[in-house]
Image (cartoon, helix red, strand yellow):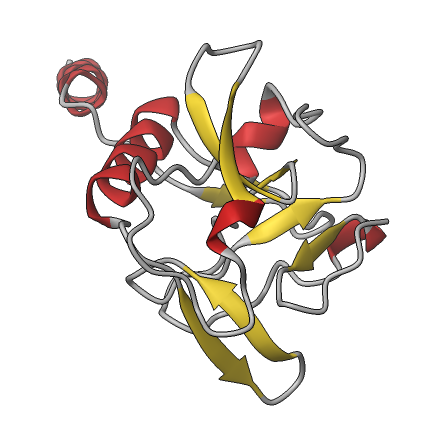
Length: 167
């Protein structure tokens, strides 16, 4: 009877912990993809939209200068996008949340403020900031200011700088 009581207690503990909303970010070792909860992704994107009213230029040893939000988070473009259209949706957005800044007050030297705009995403109806028409994204594996872990992922994701030529 003690074993049955122990198993029941463990089962109840598991149900209780599951109900508490504990979420994990799991990494698949065979992929450049990361699984992130939708709630976490939305929270990250909302916070970025609230704070990001200026863009910065940072430098990294391996990629040179690159565009960031006001917090130093790298901004990327997706080579499969087209001007005015995002082709990243569903699972793609879990790893590459859209960047949105309602009002860009400042852009770095060598950038033209008129090259920045917004689109309304067809899948979510959310706004997304663009550079020369191409939607901008974050990468979830960039955890600290100045990280550029998304550069060159699957030969489709690239940082943005004033010399960017869209593929």
